Length: 382
Image (cartoon, rainbow, N blue to C red):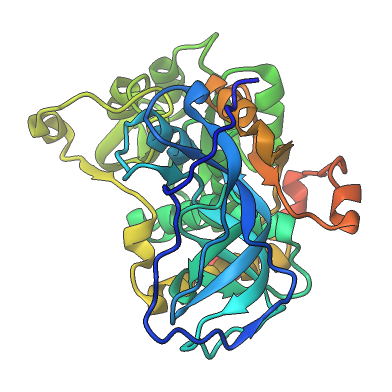
């Protein structure tokens, strides 16, 4: 078993607060909880599964009992040290669950509220969450759906609405089109009226990407991406390229972006893009942006806007979620191994404090059809 068990005595001691009053609290909150964390950077063998103290809320935070937490590439970047984080560090950037404790200054949340949130330390049974990063869930959105769509859904939405404002008729290349963000991008782009070219590695992934809205598929293990894009676009290239792969696809992405086009880099699945000269953009007057989600939702107003649009798309079934697999918290090492293999499709989730009803739904099939994604006007087109 790769997850080691140790006793992290002083590493996660709760910080003291001055005159902290817990307004409301469930009586059944334990003193310790299971979590997955690192004390040093490295491979999956550095993941530690053990008991640590349950965090304490601050004046403006809430304590969430997690039902599900999302697995994302950024978790592997933080574990490996590509993205530096203070150590020790509980991994995870998104979760969904119920509020079990409320800080003295919190007015908009109460014990029992169902929430989804972004932040740190979600690979745990409980997470202390800033209210600025949380959103209440409506009854028609499950914990599972919310945890699966939050980080990747907001990423996809801000890519097509802010990083590059996709217009009807645009030709768009999506790398890793069968991944979590890739599938959501295909659905949103189809809804916006764009022509979607997706790259995938297998026939199985090609089928999934087509079902989610990709018009053309390039299986990069069998075909040359640049040649195929040029053939599909009469040599003009794409208005925008969304590249989450990084090092392995950089040259092809640059080559297939059309004159006056945009290249949006937002991931490092194959490793970070090597240092470049800005002069490489000059021959075609290209725009280059390297994005991450959080600057797009830095203010409460921005966060509310994009959360609201995403939940509206989800509740109206304009976007649907493909969940690749659920993992127990103790099996986080296997989730990291799987996502880094780049052989998964859709979303990977940790199931943590799931109810019996939720557990009964773990193995349900998700049905996808491009025809099920309506092309009528919605909030995304605003």
